[in-house]
Image 1 (tube, rainbow, N blue to C red):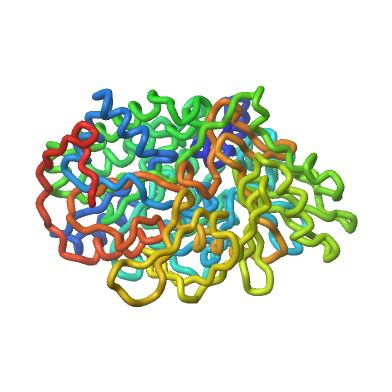
Image 2: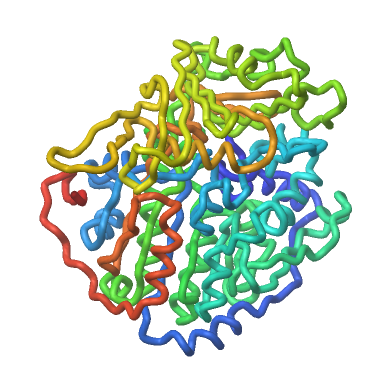
Length: 562
């Protein structure tokens, strides 16, 4: 089961924090922040414009929404879809892990730009693999102090490319206020303090407070609660220190009811992800609870109509999830066993002169690092491709990205630039067996120009693989498991019979997007294109009325755009 800090698909740090808090008899915080005063002083200059609320729901999938609407179980989703725009197939980043996806959302760049390759990764010439905390056993192997340090201090402060501005930083320069509730990636230009419970900081010798830069308003569970003393929030040990849906929605409701919303507010809802990891993508209880939280958000206004007249409300998923097969079908691919001819670094250990391979496992995706010149990437790929449960193996060499299909050994390579053009306006040169990435060529009848290339079961695969392979220095492979399977090493969490993400295929890569309160839409339906879309919304004089329901027989009321 994927145990996480702010959800089961993200970090697991809340678990040791909660345990130590309970043993110590509580987690009282004494700090007060000035976030509300800052928003209030700046909001005076933004009257007349709609506020923008972006609700990011971890592992929200179109199939869950549509199945729930067919069963008349999701009245809030139905209302939002009928009064707005609904796109079931927005393309996520890759790997489909939350830290990388959130960084893509907030920077408008794939990982080669923002430099956060995944939930676990190895820095070139480093001593250890970096892990932000994906499961309790993984945290114990890597050490609680380094995991806490990487997640709370380094992720936003060092690892996220400091030369690439985030949405929050751009908004600050434009004089537009912003806020985040429980978003893991939050770097901005306003100073905040994260205050760990005293037993935690004393046990692990962590300096207090941890000073971070974020948006004008930053609510981060009990570690940064600017509403402390103003309203009662579920942020105690039994509530995962505030890293839950109820906390996030209650913070937003307070800001709405007291007319203190910043111009842009990102709200992260983690709870759905945990249920899907445990029970699989077919679970319906989680999506029903998400629907209720969205209804509570709308009910913070005088009416639903006023909510969409006053606010641009955007609801989106971050990644999808594929069903993991039951235990008797051997769904877990143990990479150290598969690569036993090499000296593979045990999880959490320090690299020494004898280490040949390091692993960074991200559910159904992994980075496999060669630390010795004599250990060739192609040689490692030859071993991995023998396991038919593995899907794609890729690496960069001599200016090309090489891709092998495990099982049958089909090979292709590609690079940016050339005579092939995709629907996103990207140009490519492709050689070899194009079925490896399910590519097809064609040209529109009667039209001249570049040959068109279309994508099948892997959305935007060339650009997204390129982004991962150029995300950080080193010699490494990117490998993915076929749907139904997941990759593992000692200590990494597995989800046998449940659900997992990380991969390149459509089940993990396509997520729904709902936009209410405006007729505008992103140029392309990809998470990487949301930042310029949001900047445009927040800089325009936008007082559009809500759209009335559209009559449609599709999916019992869902109107899909053409």
